Image 1 (cartoon, rainbow, N blue to C red):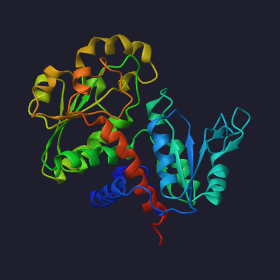
Image 2 (image 1 turned 90 degrees about the horizontal axis):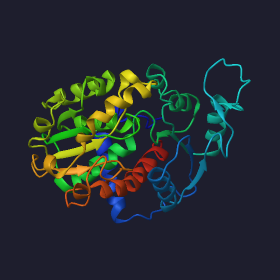
Image 3 (image 1 turned 90 degrees about the vertical axis):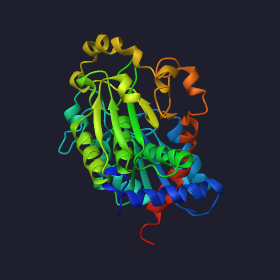
Image 4 (image 1 turned 180 degrees about the vertical axis):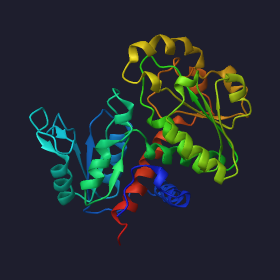
Length: 334
């Protein structure tokens, strides 16, 4: 049985097959491919695009989505093995995963890190425990990576550019008043390198470099495709001749769980905003962002409203790639 926890465990050709089928579903969205199938959607964190696209996607394929918010409209869940459950949690993931597996054909999880201890959070305990005890496929709706966003991102780029191999891809850190999850940034590096692009990570200082695990994956992918991976702290050279600019904000890992000390550092780099002057240095690059995006904080109105911005197209593609993914997983043994 195959789960969809991270794109790192899937081959490029397998991901491309999902994207290709998503392109077909975009042309003919309502098909009874998952008639009488069910999927449990567990949201430990808020959602707009993810919840809407999964619910509508399941409906368009004839499936039923059951949406649950543990701790709100479902019991709080314990994840530590061997724990004495005398706190808030009412039931353990061991039982939850097995029960939901008996009801549903798939389980999807959205669970952000707690932002206290990166060494703990990087274990991605919530979704990995569900995958361990579930007897049906488990889908990552965003934890410390966001593989569904990756698929939508690549689909949008292919629709505009075609073959992506050798394209100059810039992932740039942008300012945000709060420290955010590194999930989309991690995923950006994973998928851009997996699809053969020349990848640059631009961030203000060494403190904002992403976890070594994702750097190693990126370097390995780039090497396999004969491409380069570099980390830059220089805005001008990083933007120069880029074909794609992907923007995201994230908190500095050395200050993980100690965000008050990080804030005055982060506040020095508001000039990392994506604006027209920076985009003018590129090769007429496409711009995108996973959304939500604070206008004139992360990127200017001029950039967001330009014809080169594909953020809305990427968001729409979440619906199509997730339908293709659900079809792939639900029918993998047929």
